[in-house]
Length: 415
Image 1 (cartoon, one colour):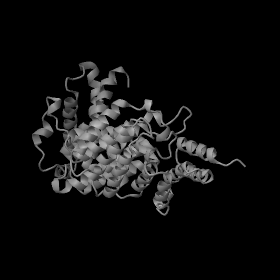
Image 2: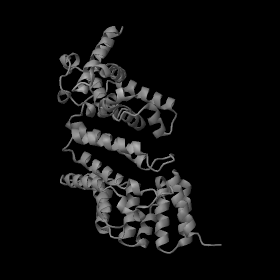
Image 3: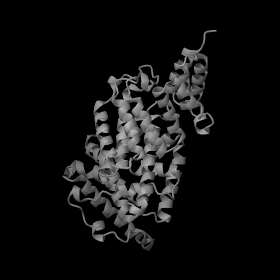
């Protein structure tokens, strides 16, 4: 798109999700909403170079898209069926009258996010729909993130849209009786997007910056729409504190760098400051939630001058609390690593060995890498080399494989 289209690109990036959510909520049809959103943007490309960018471009797009949607419905042979899908509480005037000012346009992205993450849909579909309709990623980009062919992802998204339509999944924020579980699912989906970007599986780069950035953007949207919700605040804090280390996670040769060895001067202090501030806000609410506890752990790591100077006692206490909230194998693994720093490598190894029968851990490189690091600290270099070698076989990115292989070689006893 040339210079004439640059304003449209900016609006598309910043407002496409809001416009699409507005139309989906009014018409109850994701296909229709997506089609008329694209048509409205095309109309802007054709009109704005001649007439100038309107003072309120989103209002212009919303009015244009609404009119196109109503025209389509009127032309549709199944008008009655289409009209039956409209929400009973929707105001007809809001569907037909132009909206004069940007701030008067309701932000329905939260409603759309809850629809995309409805429990009637499977987790992969929830994640794909969220990336497509809230983050605005293309089908090809989502397929790349899931390591599936674009045609497979297109079918998955189509089935998800059909399920929303046929099951009459509502575009609304759940009431208080449903919100606890439903919000947890939304946050889980967004965090899955973040973690896939932070440690990309099957990708040549360790970090998928596009996915990390989109996950943070999605969480910022949630935070703006639900500013008093401590789980949202805690998740945003956790993402910022974690992503603040991005520039130090891979060295100049493309090899992953462990947290212990990272150049902390490369960490983003502005993200750390914002994350720490949000962590404090989230922890003011009692009882604490798992996101705020994880953010507190990340803040202790980020604020420490070095790994050795980290307040490991406090980290250990927080992991004890986190394990009480979410007793998963991954939390148990991180708790064992913390114990190795707080109580010594032998205590840490004992806790790691106790997790040896966890199938989810044994098939991933993290447990083997942690065991290799702990064995090396105990001076058991041959066993450490074997653990690192096994970890390198299970790792999925070149950066991690290179790091783990170098550790295995470092501790291999010369023949």
